[in-house]
Image (cartoon, rainbow, N blue to C red):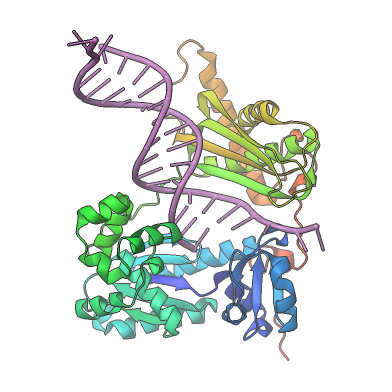
Length: 424
DNA sequence: TCTGGGGTCCTAGGACCC
DNA sequence: TCTGGGGTCCTAGGACCC
């Protein structure tokens, strides 16, 4: 059996842990630059607000109903997520972290401890609530896809626990699930399936494999097997290194300046390289993309990307930065108001997997020297805070600032911002 | 008149998720 | 005026090879 533990309105719930006065009110968390809604409390959803919606559309309604909009505080959310996952790992042997707010638990055919599934799931919820103050929903089923559906049904019905452990009950439940509600079926695929006469998850499980394959790809066919109760998406138990590492930002203020754009690209390259080294990889290809705003009809539009191949895979920030700046030079056009830049590292391989350059014997010691340098830089930045050491080309951080009108303290990761409890 | 039949690799773009 | 930032996988089509 698989259990999915999914936090309810995760970012909003993290904020509520430290500010209980946010309970019971419409609360939303905003993306960087306070642009879009990225998390909505149940009360906010009841007002019709949706994740992805631009904030300026939602602000009025929210204020009218005594709600609150908070700027994103990712230091807090990633730390709370790590705590949640550690708690789950204490409960079961195998935990697959699927995203910042959900994880699959491998739980065997019977509930641990010889209890009923309901008892076990309830105790798990209570432990997370007690230890972390976070509300979670638990879905249990024979496959990941079904556990996800069970969890979503439970959220919709507010039962907090969804048990799809009995095959007859599962078959019945699937009759009520429209195809677009299935995990992995988006609006496009749903339309295609409906026009072929497939409207519910149950119909999908009864359709022949070759019909599904004709209509969609192998991914969706595997999904249908999952719905039939045969685990097909088995993602394994190891943490798989990423295949691409991307860092992109929308600027707080659009820029036309080469120097500012270069500063942004260098900064994102450094950030991506840091993550590259954290997973012990090197990159062979680097892509830089820039574009102007998507929603301005009074400004000319320009969007372009350039790919650079490195002669030798690297995780050395100065090397990657030089390549990124070269790429930027090829696509930058003066006069456009750029709002966003992106740096993407691909063709990743294990660090040191490539043999040293036979024709340059000094290269090996140089490679080691650079690796040590990066180690020291990463260590200092981890110890004393991000950007303690940067390359000079990253500037003094004009391009690092966000518009954040209402960010909460980083309660769990910065000494100066710890919450203080007073005995009354 | 009549012009093969396999492969591989790479990239862009589509679709999806949180 | 005001619209995140990450990821994954798959497919089609082009370039190239013999």
